[in-house]
Image 1 (cartoon, rainbow over the protein chains, first blue to last red):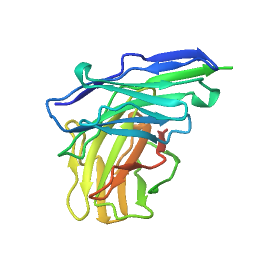
Image 2: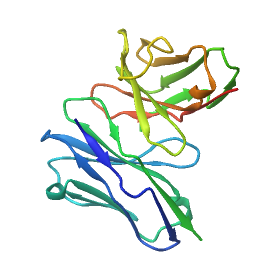
Image 3: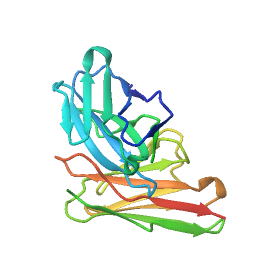
Image 4: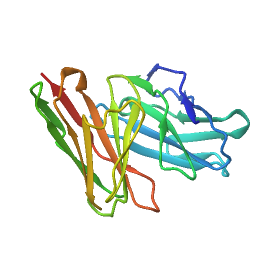
Length: 114
Length: 114
C-alpha cells in the first residue's frame, strides 16, 4: 500500500520569507510518480509538478523548487520569497506506475502574511 | 492544459432529496474519471473510479447505492448523492484522464444538505 505523510499541518510565514513544505512517502513499487498540488480557498486543485521515481534531479520553476531524495523517500517543496497569493493548502500525492489512483497526503495549510 | 468542468460549483439541497453533480472533460476523451470527497480541513479521499461504459469501482466504505456514479460517455461522468443527509455535506471533486495523461481536476462542488 502507498502512503503520503505531510507532517506539517499549518505553516505561517511573513511575506518574502522562504518556506519548505515536507512530504514523505511510502511505497514498495520501484516505479512511481510524485505530485504537488495547490488548493486555494476557491477549492480547485492546481497541478504544480509531477516527478517520476527515476528522475532525482531537483527542479526549479520560478520561485518554486522541489527536492526529491529517494534515499529518504522525501519530495519537499520550497517557495522562495513567499507572497500572500501563495496562501493555500498544498497537497503532496503519489501514484504507482501501473495504477490510476492518486494517494494524497493530509495537506499543509500555508499562510503568508503581509 | 486539459480542462475539466464540474457543475454545479455550489448546491444546497434539502435532506432526503437527491442531487446530481456533473464532471465533463472539455477537450479530451476521459476514459477514466475519479470522484473524491473532501471534508473541511482534510485531505481528498477517493470515493470511486469509473471507466467509460462500465460500472464504477468504489473504495472501501463508500456506499454504492448512496453515491451513484454514471460514466456513460467519454466526456461526462455524474455523481448522484441519493437521499442526502446533512452528514453528506462536503466538497466533492472529480478528475479525469485519458490513457496517456495525468488526471486533471474539476473545480469542485460544495454540497450543503439542510
